[in-house]
Length: 274
Image 1 (cartoon, helix red, strand yellow):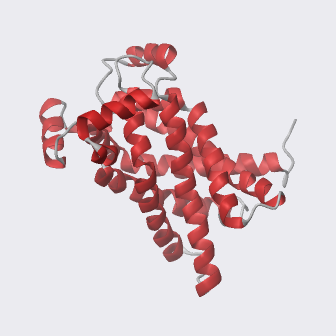
Image 2: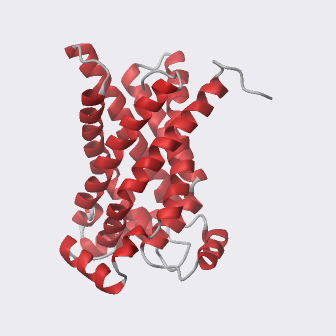
C-alpha cells in the first residue's frame, strides 16, 4: 500500500531518509576518531601511545577500519532512532506527557529499539575497528553466528545515547527559542548540537565502554554485568569513562554534523525543524 502524504507512515519514511543521509555524512567524517575511541576503551594506553601503536602495527589506512559496517549502522540504527523520535514524542504528547519528559522518553524508546535491531551491524563494526577480521567472509560468518553479542549493553547505550543526544538537543533548542527569542539557523543548530554532544558523551560513555568489552569478548555470552566487572577490575571506576575524550572528539562533531544536515534535509522534505 502506497504511503499517503501527511500520514504518520509517510512522515516516518521521510524522517528515515533524512536521518540516514545526515548520519552517513557524520559517520564518514568521524570514523577515524571512532577507531581511536575503541583502541582507548580496550587498553590502558594514552592517546599518543594508541595512535603510535596503530600506525606502527596496522598503518594509517587502518583508521578506515569498520567504515562499511559503520555506514550500514548509520542507515539502520542511526536512521531508525532519529526517524522514530518525532512520532514517539508526538504519541507521548497526545497522551498528556509533559514536553521535556516526553522528549527524553521518546529518545529512550527509539534508541533502545534501534540498538536491538541493528546490534549485528554494530558488533561487526566494533570488532572490525578492533582488528578482529582477516576478510569480509570472516566478518560475515561472525555476523551470522554472534550477531547479538553484547546486545544488552548496546540497547542500554542506545537508549541513553538517543535520549541524551536528541532529547537534549530538542529541549535546549526549544528553551533558547522560547526564553531568548533565538531563531532556527546554523548558529543555533550548531551551538545546541555541541551541547547535546557533550551531554551524550557524559551519559552514554559507561554504556559504550561496557558494550565495546562485551562485543569484543572471546565468548558471545558476555553479559552486561560480566563486561562491567571486567572494566572495573581492569581500570577502576574511571574505566567507565575511558576514551571519553576521544568519544567527545567523535560525538561532538558527529552530533553537530548530524543535526545541521538533518535540519536542512527536514526543511527540504517539508518536515519542518526538529
